Length: 212
Image (tube, rainbow, N blue to C red; front, side, top):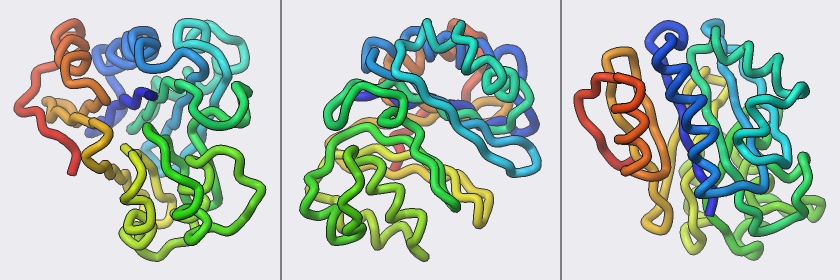
Protein backbone atom coordinates (compact mmCIF):
# COMPACT_ATOMS: atom_id res chain seq x y z
CA UNK A 1 0.00 0.00 0.00
CA UNK A 2 1.31 3.42 -1.01
CA UNK A 3 -0.29 6.85 -1.06
CA UNK A 4 -0.60 9.38 -3.87
CA UNK A 5 -1.67 13.00 -3.52
CA UNK A 6 -1.25 16.28 -5.35
CA UNK A 7 -2.35 19.69 -6.52
CA UNK A 8 -2.94 21.00 -10.04
CA UNK A 9 -3.29 24.78 -9.96
CA UNK A 10 -4.86 27.04 -12.54
CA UNK A 11 -1.86 29.37 -12.19
CA UNK A 12 0.82 28.61 -9.60
CA UNK A 13 0.35 26.99 -6.22
CA UNK A 14 -1.08 29.39 -3.64
CA UNK A 15 -0.59 29.36 0.13
CA UNK A 16 -3.59 27.17 0.93
CA UNK A 17 -2.66 24.65 -1.76
CA UNK A 18 0.92 24.64 -0.46
CA UNK A 19 -0.30 23.93 3.06
CA UNK A 20 -2.47 21.11 1.68
CA UNK A 21 0.69 19.51 0.26
CA UNK A 22 2.69 19.91 3.48
CA UNK A 23 -0.09 18.28 5.48
CA UNK A 24 -0.41 15.50 2.88
CA UNK A 25 3.29 14.63 3.04
CA UNK A 26 3.03 14.22 6.80
CA UNK A 27 -0.33 12.48 7.17
CA UNK A 28 0.33 10.29 4.13
CA UNK A 29 2.74 8.19 6.20
CA UNK A 30 -0.29 6.13 7.25
CA UNK A 31 -0.17 4.70 3.71
CA UNK A 32 3.60 4.41 3.49
CA UNK A 33 6.59 5.43 5.62
CA UNK A 34 9.47 3.74 3.77
CA UNK A 35 9.98 6.48 1.19
CA UNK A 36 8.71 9.83 -0.01
CA UNK A 37 8.88 11.51 -3.39
CA UNK A 38 7.62 14.46 -5.37
CA UNK A 39 7.08 15.61 -8.95
CA UNK A 40 7.04 19.34 -9.69
CA UNK A 41 5.92 20.82 -12.99
CA UNK A 42 6.55 24.51 -13.58
CA UNK A 43 4.26 26.87 -15.55
CA UNK A 44 6.55 26.50 -18.59
CA UNK A 45 5.98 22.72 -18.60
CA UNK A 46 9.40 21.69 -17.29
CA UNK A 47 9.24 18.77 -14.86
CA UNK A 48 11.58 17.35 -12.22
CA UNK A 49 11.43 14.79 -9.45
CA UNK A 50 13.09 13.89 -6.17
CA UNK A 51 12.75 10.84 -3.92
CA UNK A 52 14.24 9.72 -0.62
CA UNK A 53 13.94 6.54 1.44
CA UNK A 54 12.62 8.51 4.41
CA UNK A 55 9.19 9.23 5.88
CA UNK A 56 7.13 12.25 4.88
CA UNK A 57 7.96 14.41 7.89
CA UNK A 58 11.69 13.89 7.40
CA UNK A 59 11.32 14.59 3.67
CA UNK A 60 9.99 18.08 4.42
CA UNK A 61 13.03 18.99 6.50
CA UNK A 62 15.73 17.10 4.56
CA UNK A 63 18.54 19.24 3.11
CA UNK A 64 18.63 17.21 -0.12
CA UNK A 65 14.98 17.93 -0.88
CA UNK A 66 14.95 21.60 0.09
CA UNK A 67 15.55 23.01 -3.41
CA UNK A 68 12.78 20.81 -4.79
CA UNK A 69 10.38 22.03 -2.13
CA UNK A 70 11.29 25.60 -3.09
CA UNK A 71 10.45 24.73 -6.71
CA UNK A 72 7.09 23.39 -5.55
CA UNK A 73 6.11 26.81 -4.22
CA UNK A 74 6.32 28.18 -7.78
CA UNK A 75 4.94 25.12 -9.58
CA UNK A 76 1.67 24.57 -11.42
CA UNK A 77 1.53 20.86 -10.59
CA UNK A 78 2.90 18.91 -7.62
CA UNK A 79 2.43 15.16 -7.18
CA UNK A 80 3.50 13.52 -3.92
CA UNK A 81 4.02 9.86 -3.02
CA UNK A 82 4.36 7.98 0.26
CA UNK A 83 5.94 4.58 -0.34
CA UNK A 84 5.25 1.31 1.41
CA UNK A 85 7.85 -1.11 0.09
CA UNK A 86 6.43 -4.15 -1.74
CA UNK A 87 9.32 -4.86 -4.13
CA UNK A 88 12.95 -3.79 -4.25
CA UNK A 89 15.10 -2.51 -1.42
CA UNK A 90 14.26 0.44 0.77
CA UNK A 91 16.68 2.83 -0.97
CA UNK A 92 16.34 6.19 -2.68
CA UNK A 93 16.61 4.69 -6.16
CA UNK A 94 13.57 2.46 -5.59
CA UNK A 95 11.34 5.27 -4.34
CA UNK A 96 8.88 7.14 -6.53
CA UNK A 97 8.71 9.05 -8.83
CA UNK A 98 10.29 7.10 -11.69
CA UNK A 99 11.60 9.36 -14.42
CA UNK A 100 12.44 8.72 -18.05
CA UNK A 101 12.96 10.93 -21.09
CA UNK A 102 9.26 11.55 -21.74
CA UNK A 103 7.42 10.62 -18.55
CA UNK A 104 7.74 10.96 -14.80
CA UNK A 105 5.25 9.27 -12.49
CA UNK A 106 4.21 7.47 -9.32
CA UNK A 107 2.36 4.21 -8.67
CA UNK A 108 0.29 2.72 -5.90
CA UNK A 109 -0.15 -1.03 -6.22
CA UNK A 110 1.63 -4.16 -7.35
CA UNK A 111 1.78 -5.75 -10.80
CA UNK A 112 3.02 -9.31 -11.55
CA UNK A 113 6.29 -9.43 -13.45
CA UNK A 114 5.01 -11.67 -16.28
CA UNK A 115 2.70 -9.09 -17.89
CA UNK A 116 5.31 -6.38 -17.34
CA UNK A 117 7.96 -8.28 -19.30
CA UNK A 118 5.62 -8.33 -22.29
CA UNK A 119 5.65 -4.53 -22.42
CA UNK A 120 9.25 -4.01 -21.31
CA UNK A 121 11.61 -7.03 -21.36
CA UNK A 122 14.53 -5.17 -19.76
CA UNK A 123 15.62 -7.41 -16.87
CA UNK A 124 17.40 -4.60 -15.03
CA UNK A 125 14.16 -3.38 -13.43
CA UNK A 126 13.84 -4.38 -9.79
CA UNK A 127 10.70 -2.41 -8.96
CA UNK A 128 7.50 -3.12 -10.91
CA UNK A 129 6.66 0.59 -11.04
CA UNK A 130 9.88 1.45 -12.85
CA UNK A 131 9.07 -1.07 -15.59
CA UNK A 132 5.57 0.39 -16.02
CA UNK A 133 6.96 3.87 -16.55
CA UNK A 134 9.72 2.62 -18.84
CA UNK A 135 6.94 1.18 -21.02
CA UNK A 136 4.83 4.35 -20.84
CA UNK A 137 7.89 6.36 -21.84
CA UNK A 138 8.09 4.48 -25.15
CA UNK A 139 4.37 4.06 -25.79
CA UNK A 140 2.46 6.11 -28.34
CA UNK A 141 -0.78 5.25 -26.53
CA UNK A 142 -0.80 4.60 -22.76
CA UNK A 143 -3.88 2.38 -23.15
CA UNK A 144 -1.67 -0.25 -24.77
CA UNK A 145 0.44 -0.41 -21.59
CA UNK A 146 -2.58 -0.48 -19.28
CA UNK A 147 -4.04 -3.44 -21.17
CA UNK A 148 -1.03 -5.53 -20.12
CA UNK A 149 -1.23 -4.75 -16.41
CA UNK A 150 -4.96 -5.22 -15.80
CA UNK A 151 -4.31 -8.38 -13.76
CA UNK A 152 -2.34 -6.36 -11.22
CA UNK A 153 -3.30 -3.51 -8.93
CA UNK A 154 -2.60 0.06 -9.86
CA UNK A 155 -3.32 3.73 -9.43
CA UNK A 156 -0.96 5.71 -11.64
CA UNK A 157 -0.33 9.44 -11.87
CA UNK A 158 2.20 10.72 -14.39
CA UNK A 159 3.25 13.75 -16.41
CA UNK A 160 4.17 13.43 -20.08
CA UNK A 161 6.60 15.99 -21.45
CA UNK A 162 5.57 15.25 -25.04
CA UNK A 163 2.17 16.90 -24.71
CA UNK A 164 2.73 18.60 -21.33
CA UNK A 165 -0.23 16.75 -19.82
CA UNK A 166 -1.12 15.12 -16.52
CA UNK A 167 -2.44 11.55 -16.73
CA UNK A 168 -4.24 9.43 -14.14
CA UNK A 169 -5.32 5.80 -14.38
CA UNK A 170 -6.52 3.21 -11.90
CA UNK A 171 -8.23 -0.14 -11.75
CA UNK A 172 -10.70 -1.38 -9.17
CA UNK A 173 -7.97 -2.62 -6.82
CA UNK A 174 -6.52 0.78 -5.91
CA UNK A 175 -8.30 4.04 -5.00
CA UNK A 176 -7.68 7.58 -6.26
CA UNK A 177 -10.03 10.50 -5.60
CA UNK A 178 -10.12 13.95 -7.22
CA UNK A 179 -11.75 17.17 -6.01
CA UNK A 180 -12.36 20.23 -8.17
CA UNK A 181 -11.55 23.41 -6.26
CA UNK A 182 -11.77 27.10 -7.06
CA UNK A 183 -8.06 27.15 -7.90
CA UNK A 184 -7.72 23.85 -9.77
CA UNK A 185 -7.71 20.21 -8.64
CA UNK A 186 -6.53 18.31 -5.59
CA UNK A 187 -6.32 14.54 -5.34
CA UNK A 188 -5.49 11.79 -2.88
CA UNK A 189 -5.60 8.01 -2.56
CA UNK A 190 -7.92 8.16 0.43
CA UNK A 191 -11.29 9.90 0.22
CA UNK A 192 -11.45 10.65 3.94
CA UNK A 193 -7.96 12.12 3.96
CA UNK A 194 -8.77 14.25 0.92
CA UNK A 195 -11.85 15.71 2.58
CA UNK A 196 -9.98 16.43 5.79
CA UNK A 197 -7.08 18.12 3.98
CA UNK A 198 -9.50 20.25 1.95
CA UNK A 199 -11.35 21.39 5.08
CA UNK A 200 -8.19 21.97 7.11
CA UNK A 201 -6.74 24.24 4.44
CA UNK A 202 -9.96 26.08 3.53
CA UNK A 203 -10.06 24.91 -0.08
CA UNK A 204 -13.56 25.48 -1.44
CA UNK A 205 -14.50 22.52 -3.62
CA UNK A 206 -17.26 21.82 -6.13
CA UNK A 207 -17.29 18.04 -6.33
CA UNK A 208 -15.30 14.90 -5.57
CA UNK A 209 -15.01 11.92 -7.90
CA UNK A 210 -12.98 8.74 -8.33
CA UNK A 211 -10.37 8.74 -11.07
CA UNK A 212 -11.49 6.69 -14.08
